[in-house]
Amino acid sequence: MNILSVDQIYKADKITIKNQNIDSVQLMERAGEQVFDWIEDILMGAPIHIHVFCGIGNNGGDGLVVGRLLIESDYNVTVYVVNFSDKRSKDFLHNYDRIKTDTKVWPTLIKSEKDFPEIGSGDIVLDSIFGIGLNRSPEGWVKKLIEHLNKSGALIISIDIPSGLFANKALEDKDAVIKATHTLTFQIPKLAFFLPETGPFASMVKTLDIGLDQKFIEEAEPLAQLISQEEAQSFYIPRKKFGYKGTYGHALIVAGSYGKIGAAVLASTAAFRIGAGMVTAFVPKCGYNILQTTLPEAMVITDKEEEFITEITSDFEPTAIGIGMGMGKNQATVQALKKLFKNSKSQFVIDADALNNISENKDLMKLLPKKSILTPHPGELKRLIGSWNDDYEKLEKVKKFSKKHDVVVIVKGAYTATVYEDKIYINTSGNPGMGTAGSGDTLSGILTGLLCQGYDILSASLFGVFMHGFAGNKAADKMGYEALIAGDIIENLSEAYVELFMDPENDNWEDDDLFDDDWDDDDWDDDEWEDDFLK
Ligand SMILES: NC(=O)C1=CN([C@@H]2O[C@H](COP(=O)(O)OP(=O)(O)OC[C@H]3O[C@@H](n4cnc5c(N)ncnc54)[C@H](OP(=O)(O)O)[C@@H]3O)[C@@H](O)[C@H]2O)[C@@H](O)CC1
Ligand SMILES: Nc1ncnc2c1ncn2[C@@H]1O[C@H](COP(=O)(O)OP(=O)(O)O)[C@@H](O)[C@H]1O
Ligand SMILES: [K+]
Image (cartoon, rainbow, N blue to C red; front, side, top):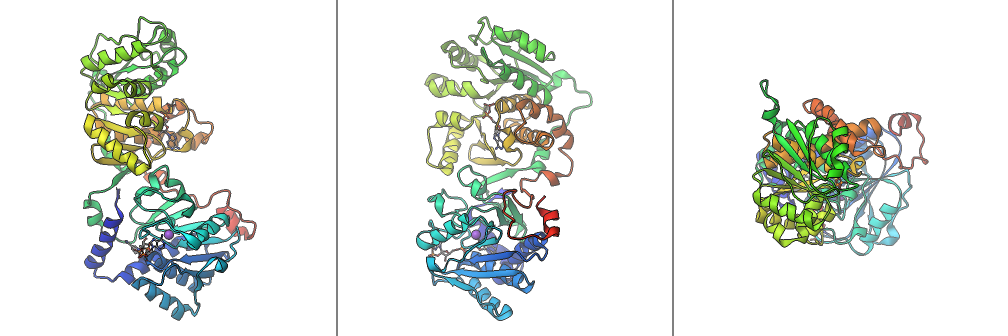
């Protein structure tokens, strides 16, 4: 699924209107109806108080459509116009007139702080103050209104985007942004929803199909692409009937130091479980018994040193090498890395301390093998590319690094971003339970195992990151977030493979859970509502 820029979204709007021979008011009606249907599905006529806050642009126009439809369906609604400017959009004005004529209800004007209404914590706020037309941070009483709504404790449903958030530009004032409980976005997801600084404002995103021109959306050069189950399916390489272990490659996992041999165990096991034909672990001597006992399927080569790695050798040419997990930063280890990078013809997945060593040693950076996959978490990334002011600058810096060194960079986190040259891919699987030690070691093993099976560096990265998160989701389904440990991700890779081609419905990135548990429902007690939705 393509993530487009604000300019492209406006273009999609225009092309849709032209190709479908409709006018912009009809498109706004469609958008408003979609929002209304979503709310109607949930509320089913419940008399809960809904406050609709409309700006004066087209986002406000959408709010007026929803307000009108809610009033016409006898909901308990108050519609407000947040009058921050007299410069109203044409379609806003059309719907402003229409709500008054059709419902005989006149929206309440908010012109300053003294007009702010009381909002009960059991109420619903519909936020259509600003949409993608926001061009500067809200200030003055408008900012105060946003703060007032955020403090209310009400459930906040944002239309298209939480007001105050830029769709694809850095945050300027985090206090001037609506903290939405739900975001109902029109068809095209916005980049801000997936980045760590801005994503938390837009939890529970749902895309509503308003019939925008599909051809334009698919053919546009996206800001980023979302990788969901459907895309992951397209990367999968089926096992061959006459394949044997040699067909699926030989992985070398170079990892571990005294006290961190587990990293080698996790990565080696994951390489096997994702389907590598053979796996050899290269570890310091102290890792020998541990590996032979915990993973008898693997072969083990040990360094001459007891506690860390000093010289990496093998009597075979590995198809792919996964290197760095728990490896430490001993000077001898740095020398071993230099020698390996200079001499090896294998493909590389470079993680953890291998990355840290590269960041600290310019000579090693120069030897960084082209076409490698690098898997930094945010701390490792900062050491590698330097600090950034915001997520957008970070992504630009990563693109530059990727181009300069001809490597894929996987920026790990919630919605892991894979960057290759100018392109950004955002993963949609995974969950907070995966924030647990060794989860990254597991990913490195997965990626190494995929390179072994003939996936190219980009498809190994996109498929591997997806499968890692997908297996994490299978694990979380059974055990919840807190109890999940890295080994559970590996154990659930089998289920992830088995379910890869099943109905993606339950693993969509859009969270269909209706309400957060902490929503306060004291003010309202309809048994049917509670039975159905607040379980
Ligand atoms: N594209 C689609 O497919 C469809 C889009 N639709 C909807 O249209 C929405 C976009 O509407 P939009 O372009 O009218 O912009 P919107 O966000 O309502 O507000 C802009 C107004 O705010 C002002 N302004 C900006 N920042 C400000 C600030 N900090 N403080 C104060 N004022 C500020 C700015 O005026 P300015 O003062 O900058 O001249 C302007 O007047 C989109 O999100 C979606 O909901 C659907 O209806 C149909 C399909
Ligand atoms: N909230 C989250 N949602 C999705 N995935 C997550 C989340 N937190 C962590 N992860 C994933 O878990 C892994 C953690 O990697 P890393 O920090 O390197 O762990 P470690 O170094 O302990 O092995 C990454 O792949 C990351 O994307
Ligand atoms: K909004």
